[in-house]
Length: 212
Image (tube, rainbow, N blue to C red; front, side, top):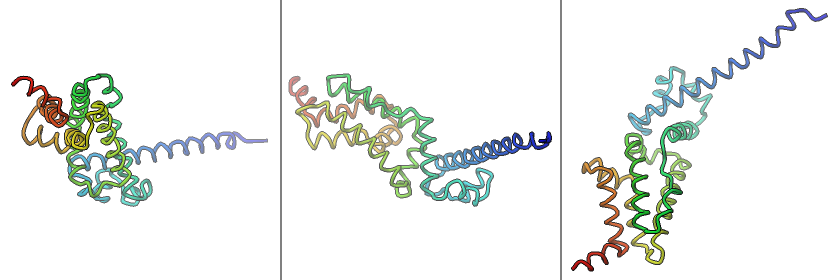
């Protein structure tokens, strides 16, 4: 005969197991939140494991237990930050047949993303040497895709010089120089870069010649 005590033991063990798993998930979330907050305020290069542990309210050993190396924690932090942003959507840029209209649409989208994430992106670029290769590769791959889609719109007028001009226009450093250092609005910066790329492509050059 099975006693009531034995019948109730399994549910209690199951509850404890579920509760333990929930506690572990909460601890992991606290660690990722702490890393993200520090990356956004002091930057990855100045964020130590001890600082993350203090911010999260856990021990260094607990951080190591959940994230055995810096790269795994950085990836979790980066993924969480990106999930809270609205990254550029290059698939929405391909509709205009006019290459400069496509460029304007793309740069408007990119510069919106840069402005909304300026604080984190500035520190990530400043501390680029500390960014794990996998994260750096993903970021560079996205930027290469932006350049390719915008460059492709120029058809037969494509050239290495034009590709370089578009690469300069989509760069975070370019946006930051124009909008943060020089104080331009996103709209003004987009217009300036559309004119710049248009000149490199010969689009604006032809227009100016026609006005003379």
